Image 1 (cartoon, helix red, strand yellow):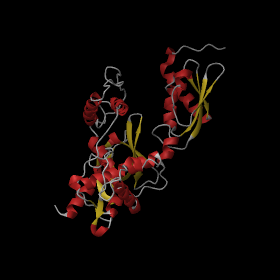
Image 2 (image 1 turned 180 degrees about the vertical axis):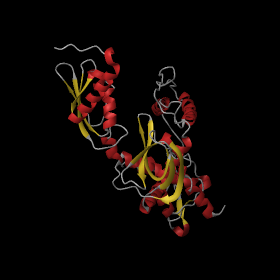
Image 3 (image 1 turned 135 degrees about the vertical axis):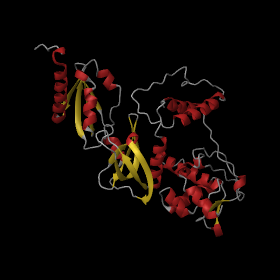
Amino acid sequence: MSRAQTRGAYLRQPWALYGGGQGYRHLRQRHHDTRSSQCKVTLIGTMMVKSSKRRDAQMVRILAELGILLEGGLPTVHELAARFNTRRETIYRDLRTLQDAGYPITGERGLLSRPRLFDRAKQARPGIRLNAPEIDAMLWAAGQVGAQHPFQAEVSAATTKLRGMLAAQPDAESPVSDSVVLWQQRGDKDYSVHQATIKTIVEAILRRRRCQISYRSPAAPAPKSFEYDPYRLLSVSDGLYCLGRTSTHTEITMLAVERLISIRVTGATFRVAPTFEPERYEQEAFGVIWDEPIDVAVRFRQDQAPYVAERIWHPSQSVEPQPDGSLILRFRAGGRFEIVRWILGWGDAAEVLAPSELRDQVGTILSSAAARYGGLIPATKAG
């Protein structure tokens, strides 16, 4: 295979972002630079001064770059910058971080614009080292993956390996073993048959590639085909959705993954709209639907107040205990449909105090529901 073919093969793999499966391995093995036997700085130590989010993003990117070089990839800095959607200056800093960690990064004619890993055959792959609490945390997360998860088979295989790692620990007892915790899922969507679709969406998001999709909403008589720019996957209440824009709408369009009939990544690229703010979405939306936030106040009856108070329903919520034992929950969120459905789930234990439009809507729905039951509902005594 020629040099150009080798470079292109690696950059065409969307999973190269994760270092070809090696990306998340910790860089704990120290490599001595032949020019300085004192160089024992690891990547993790070098990056400790950065904020957590920024550090994590940089570590994933650097591990992926190292994985490409270890596997014999021959990318240019320009290609790496395009691959990871960042600036060339950032890639140069990453390469210097690898050099500081002891990896002999060189380039053609002494330039790092075409980085190479000198004497690649002698470079060991960074190994995974997890302590017992970290293994327990991974097993706990894996236990919450139901049979309908799109990567259930892979999670099951990884769980077996984790249990083997745990068994090798001095204290092999785990607080998340099957004999301790019973995992139970209800009302989950079945994503086990959508793995290929999800991988295609991830590829399109990472590469900023437009997709041609066929989609069928529950109310539509037939599927519709259109172009779609996927921005981000959203997981809410065991549902998986894609946020993005169509070529005919300026606002964000949300698609349920399981309703995609087909999806194909095209050669056309796109730019994420500057108005797209995922952090704002996370803070404002009550669930899946994102619309103008409203100030909500709901009073909960005394017997249900403890159950309301022990959960976080929205990041903006405040809880106000009342003298009679009832409780008022306040929050500011968008998604009126989901807010109404949640309130109705509390039956007659919840009373909407504000806004008045929401109170009227819930009251109308409850009146309609009561009418369906007719004489089965006993009359309430006055006074």
